[in-house]
Structures are given as structure tokens and as C-alpha cells.
Length: 179
Length: 94
Image (tube, rainbow over all chains, first blue to last red):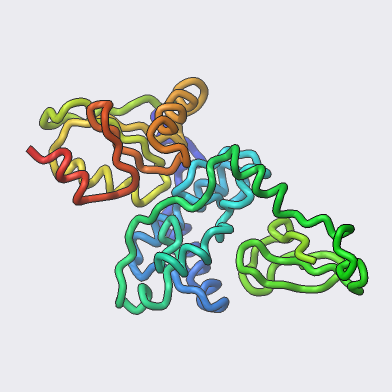
């Protein structure tokens, strides 16, 4: 049997179009824009669906995912790097999301450099980024902890992070303790 | 198991493309090489497993520690990271 014939890799055109429509709806509702090149965006929608079948989550189609959730968490779409790449390049790493200027056709989407650190440096970075709140007296006095969405920067003060980020729809596991 | 796929064409030395099957930039890079009619081989690393996958990852890291795709290795001496059309044309056009 050829690789092409393997079950998880077969995604119908209808599934791709439906997923693309959903991504489009959710992006616009949250103030983001999808790549106006529909064929390109649909290839990415297909890649996301393939990764969802392979791993159970929509890892970035343009990055090598491992299938280990803890190692891939930062590249589950929308990835932790989207907003910085939109600000700097007008396009996210895979090209699914674009800035307003690219969406309006004033700027072209192109292949951009990888912002994500290599695996060995990434783990150190994550550990160092978690503040030890016991060292900050003012933080101990807060009536609620403050949580930050690592995807879009949304902050909220409550006992636990929300199940789904109300801004970008990232899951609870994407939140970090901010204060 | 996914192995390297050979695409016939004009000889421009050993040209190896490390790609991901789910990535449109990698699709575009293959289409560019096809349009230039250059002989090359490629591997979709996301579909490879076991030793073949590990060897491909090691080969990519030599050129590109951040392990991003596509990586086009030309003659074992030069690598072009990402879809850089002008650079690819310059390196491979007869």
C-alpha cells in the first residue's frame, strides 16, 4: 500500500472547505485575518486536519511535530509565535494568518524565518519564564492570580485560567501564571 | 516506510530536498524544482519513521539547527532554507 492510501492522510475536499470556513469565521471574529490566497489557506487547513488525525491536535503544518503533546504545545495552531510574526513580517510562520495589510493585498505574504528556538534552548526558556511568585511580596497580596494566554497575550485574574481563551480560542493548557 | 523519492531531470549535482507533506511552502518548492526540470530527491520527514526519520532530522540539523522546512541541500556543500526562489534559481539554473 502506498503512503497516499493510508487512512489518516485522506481528507476530503468537503472537509477541507468546511475547516477553512470555520478558521475564517473564527479569525475574523477575533480580529485576525486568514491568508487571502484561498488555495494556499486550504492546503494549510488540510495539513491541520492531517495533524489532528495523526496526533489528536492541530500542530502547525509547516513544522515537524513529534506527537508528544508537551513538546508540541507551543506549535498547536494558533501557535505561540503568531502575533510576533504578524507584527514583524505581516504573516505567521506557516502563512495561515496574515496582517491587515496582507489581507487587503497591500503587502505580499512570503516565507519567513523560524522564530521558535531549537528544542534544547526551548525547554530552558520555558522553565525560566515561570515566575516564582513567592519571591514577589506584592503578588502574594493579589486577591486572584493573573493568567496570561501565551498565544494572544490576553490577561485575566481568576482562580484558574478559562477553559478556552475568549480572544483566540486557545485551550487552558496554553495559559501561564503571569502574576 | 517513507524513503527518498527520486525525481528525474537535468543533472545539477546531488540535490536533496527535506520537506513536510503538510506544508504548502514545501509543495511550492517541489513545484519550483519541477518547473526547472532539475533532477532531485526529496523526503517528507513528517511521514518518515524510525531510522530514516532520525537520519533525515540529523541531516537537516547540520544545516539548520532550528529544524525548519523546506531545506534544499545542493551538492552537499550549500543549503537553502525556506522557499527562496531567486536563490534556488541562481544555484540550480544551467
